[in-house]
Amino acid sequence: MFRAAELGQTTSKRIFKSRSPELRQRLLEAQIHLSRNCDFGVMIDFAGVDGAGKGSTVNMLHAWMDTRLMTTNAYGRPTEADRMLPKYWRFWRDLPRRGRIAFNLRARYSTPFLDRVYGRTTDLEYIAELKRIQAFERALADDGMLILKFWMHLSRDAQKQRLETLESDPETAWRVNKRDWEHWELYERFVQVAERTITETNTNYAPWHIIEGVDENHRILTVSEILLEALNKRFDATGHLPSPEVLVDKDAFEVKDTIVDKPEGHVTVFDTLDMTASLKKANYQRKLSKQQRRIHLLQREALNQGRSSVLVFEGPDAAGKGGAIRRLIPTLDARNYRVLQYGKPTDEENARHYLWRFWRRLQHGGHLTVFDRSWYGRVLVERIEGFATENEWRRAFAEINDFEDQLVESGTILVKFWLHITPDEQLKRFEGRKQKPFKRWKMTGEDWRNRAKWYEYEEAGHDVVKYTSTHISPWELVPANNKNFARIEVLQTFGDYLEKALKESE
Image 1 (cartoon, rainbow, N blue to C red):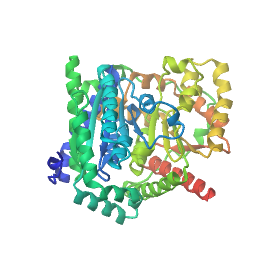
Image 2 (image 1 turned 60 degrees about the horizontal axis):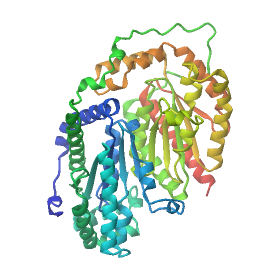
Image 3 (image 1 turned 180 degrees about the vertical axis):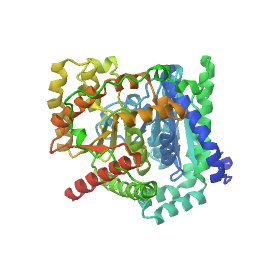
Image 4 (image 1 turned 90 degrees about the horizontal axis):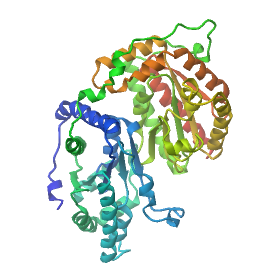
């Protein structure tokens, strides 16, 4: 079965660079179309041999697409609390909502697969587990879910070479452990069980795609093309395919700039920032590599110590929050972080305290959660747009402080970034988005409406800093007119927090 994935297929850097921009653009168009116009979710599973590139492929897809419209779920063996509930509750809990994509690593196949490899279950018991998986996938598919499954494969010799290469590099040696070599010793047994797994569960509604994992460029292009083809096939079945126009909110290009003049006596904490701070490109690339490597090593230690981190990003539209987050992601293991973005509360969320939807997304020890917009919406957009009463948003300052105190007291490393730009710089970036197809999707009419209230939002931001920048959880204010400067400032600051917290716990 796997001989077709042991051909040594490679894609040169030249070909990758020529093909990837258009492919990335089309994937983004498909993702935005999915989120705005479709009533089905997408669940993508990655399985396969150790070292075949499952995590790095997910990382690349995160870099190519909009992280706010996707989640990554990674599962270990069930905890004691998990065992008190039905086996599949974890998978039902993490299903993507309609219009969203979920990547799953070490998911529903992992535990039964390893149990069979190690002989902890019989063949009949394993087949019964596969039948349960099929029933689960069938129920989701019948409800409209698009399901794709990728088996990332390496030959026995290629896997050994990959493990040795990772082990020989101080920056990647941590990714190889005793278990990986144990699995390599059992390679033939793994392949036998894998063949049975794929044979029994390769269905038209949840197909397996076997991907050769030797060459990263080939692997990423192949996975991306399969994903794009599957999305377009589903879109075609609904009667329309996405196009570049799907990335355009017509209101974004019809609204005229209506920002009001700065009010008399308007002074905020943001006036103290040096908005001319900048960093040249040559220095930026050098510092970026240095800080990414530093965070990689520190985050690895945080995982070992079971120390979770929560990063909060706030600031005006187009301040560069997403860009800073994308420079952070390459330093991380896709199985150990989530990037979350919050918009209007759902009916379920509105039926509870506004902090409920944030409490429920916190992760276990060692993991990183990134909030691109957060609970501060209560005292920002909900305050300005009248979605919260004055009594509600005023009392929220104390509620937020208490929430954050509990995070820090539990050992969570909390870092709050406010990326700030000037009105002129925002206008420049808005206009720039109009001209670049790759960025046009970011522009909406809502951005212009928010801009018209610039100074109201700036005053609300001033109150956020005044009332919630405490000694336990201070705000880090970052002048972001220069993107290079802001991105390095974010990475360096997060690294400083990690380093300090880990030293204190030694």
